[in-house]
Image 1 (cartoon, rainbow, N blue to C red):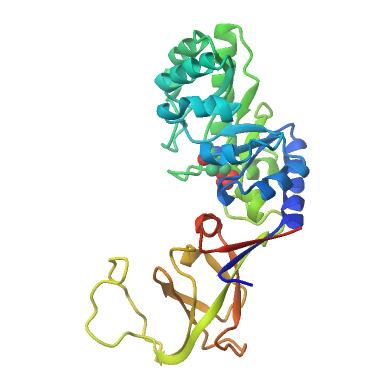
Image 2 (spheres, rainbow, N blue to C red):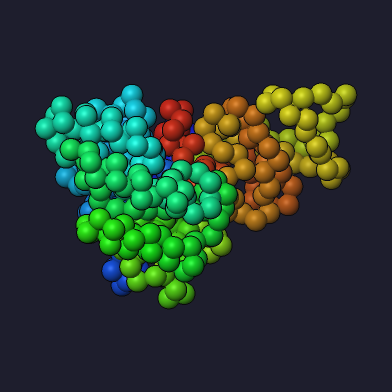
Length: 354
Ligand SMILES: *Cc1c(COP(=O)(O)O)cnc(C)c1O
């Protein structure tokens, strides 16, 4: 075995995928399975597809390229860069958009390859990341409908992200009424009304999801079993599809407070310390180049994470009853950002269990 190691349990992932699909299907909602959290590692994507996902969504076209051989619809989540228009129409069936100029570039690229490209127009309902404002919708739709190689497949919203705005029956109803308004004004149908991400699941659970919302883009709930508006665990899902292990390279009893005049730490921040007297400190061989250190979720509640630098993470193991020695392997669950970092780092060995 080589460490640090990220273990991925595909059976648990498939189980979570099925649970989320069942929750959404019960309300007539289709799910785009979001793979950016694990860099769209093809074997993991395949497991999601085997569990019933019909559309895979990722923020990066590079990730969608990696999984071209997997027969599943592909959706690009991040607004396309105009410079990538050709890749977008070639490697994604559908993309989320908010800029007429970009959609026009997609139309020209699609024309060049004799394709039709589908777009979901994003509307900003207050989270202040991507999306046109509600009052701009009519004008933008009119321009899209005039483009030869673009099909307006739907409208969508993203919440919970930049501003942390929580999806509610109220703001999602606003999305629905925008869709209805477009349908009436242009006598067209808007097949997809995409009501957000893992943060929208609580509305299904509370039975307050507007019935016209028929699409969600879901990553974290599948990968970790959490809805993300309130951080609640979703019943009957696994939280440990992804686990992380690292090896102890030093264990010593030392002071809890550094000795000497304090300047900046290795990342240019001024550290703050709590004096707990002498403590047992274990160093594990992983750091910020491998993992989001504060996203390591320890299994033993008596171990605490003191911090880390690029290549080292320091644990306070004073209170644990485990007899920790050099060479021991410590295991963690991970938050979403930590999964993402571990998958991105080439120093983390990935082991997939079927
Ligand atoms: C990342 C992302 C999602 C998925 O978010 P989760 O919280 O992982 O479900 C959905 N939509 C967009 C636009 C995204 O960027």
